[in-house]
Length: 426
Image 1: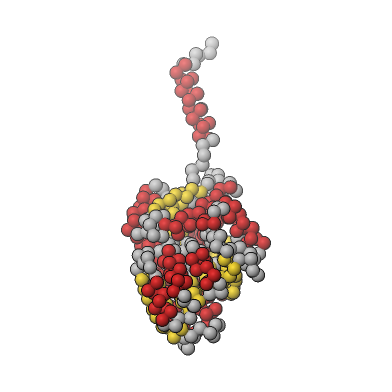
Image 2: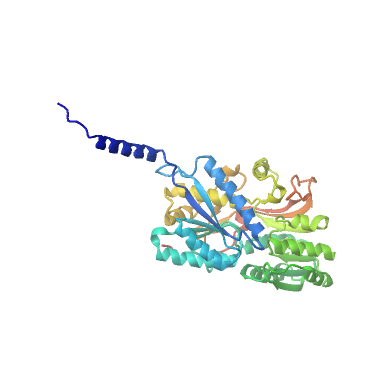
């Protein structure tokens, strides 16, 4: 005779089986990335432009199934933390991010903020080894960040200021018509370094050039650059070198146009965030920019990459695409898969020395993470503003009618500079 089953036990078993079945089909836990950036205030447009880049990169990884791990593939999740353009708020947002279980922090629009985040991350990872995090930097380019302040927990995916300046100086040094140069920058670590290093490189490469002016201005606070442009014009300036970015660059170039300044601008970021439209026809043949890529590189893979981004973000004002930000997310995904873990120490070790061939970008842009200082080594292009539709300028920038054409290409190995990093590893 069979023993009778208790109805209560039967119901309990059914509930447990149901919970087990639902757990088997639960969505995998996402891998959290925290974007800590000024998403409001004077440079909010630059922060939002970065966000679009990273959103597109995350979507691409997730569309192919996510990041493959031994326990199953997991999607990436991008979280927004608005630093409001201040270092203090960025540090507060960093603490909030790690409290939410974020293992990967992304920032770049301010080298001063990046330096503070490196210090904060070093201390956090030492205090709390059970929840360490990595800092992936897409545009804070003060060289000190991968030299004196280098950290095992920090990786930079943009060419630093000296690498960019060396490329720009190759072009400027070859222009024998330039005899008078004006240096201007934002008054913080990066801007100060660009002005100082520009003077040094000019003395080495073109000692015949006279530096007719040197300015450092408050970052994000100058609303009228006309007085600066007037001084440049009065000094007979033929070329301006600037590391300005965001509205500080747009307003500077606009003021130069209004003042009738006939000078070339050697910039880090003159091909985006309103700068081409601000200067208009006066910039044709005069505004130069340096970057790891630009839309008119001219290969089929590059064209397809850019067209896909414009399809995802069709508004002209949203036209801000950087291959380095796409590479950052791809290198992170590849490193997590290589490590077989999301634990920061293991991912960092997997990322050191990693070579990315650009396969998920169509194969046109790649590079390698240099193990000694965690600097991503990649090609650089110096490009010059031209009317769209002309030879080599198929695409314009931000619907302005003006695009950029390559005037100098440097393969990855030609951009690398020595590092003074003495990295302490866990």
